[in-house]
Length: 38
Image 1 (cartoon, rainbow, N blue to C red):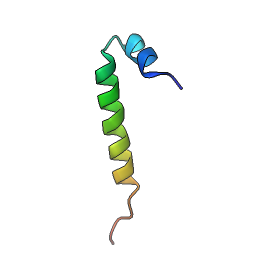
Image 2 (cartoon, rainbow, N blue to C red):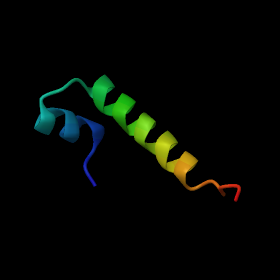
Image 3 (cartoon, rainbow, N blue to C red):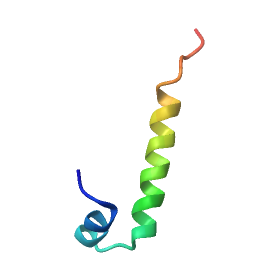
């Protein structure tokens, strides 16, 4: 995979933005993988 710095450079955004998106995506994925009540 790419480092945070590599992604930031590629997308021309600050590293903080990349970290925020990554954190949000991981939280969303973790929530999606939780068992859902039926």
